[in-house]
Image (cartoon, rainbow, N blue to C red; front, side, top):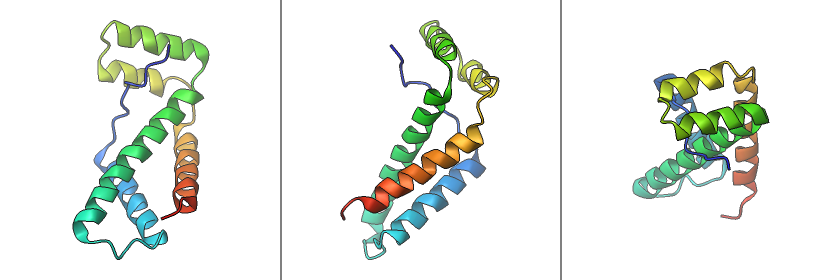
Length: 114
């Protein structure tokens, strides 16, 4: 069974890009009238959900063999660096996967009722 415990490390630049993306989502949804605390809570929630969706997309883009290898690595206590290397050498175009995941996340968020 696939475990979703592998966390994709975000660089500060990637984190800022995702934060800006989420801020724009909030504006595009027309939620600018939220008080600052509620907006900050929503932004944190959306960042967590977006990161989860991107991680899920990364994992779904991997081959069955790579997923088995990742689970074996996780079972034996592989480091974050070792898991990161598996992703880096997987042959998956993660930039494309990320963009598609972000587009899907945006579409779903904007379609939801307020």
